[in-house]
Image (cartoon, rainbow, N blue to C red; front, side, top):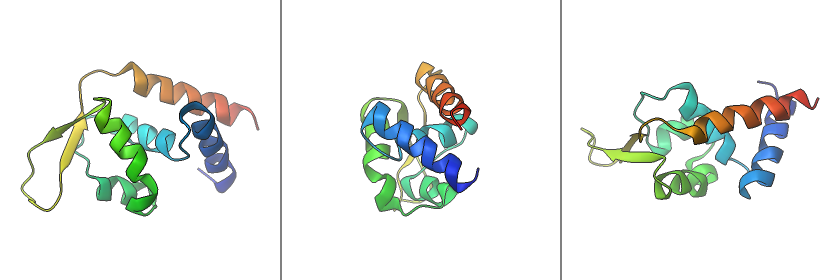
Length: 102
């Protein structure tokens, strides 16, 4: 994904959620729905700082999209997708629509 695609996705995220990075977080999670995530690991995957996605990540946890799971690293909290999610499918739809508006 090039910079102009990221800009379109971030603009769509801002419109849909009032947060620039939430859609990117959701798309990364949708691409790997069985993986365990932490705030830091997701930020690394997106090549962002944890502080940039902290609010978006917390919203995904607070809404129940991500559920806590035990980890071997006591310094990091782990999370997984909390079951099948229409929200993640909607994120993919938003991505397709935003990228189609080139």
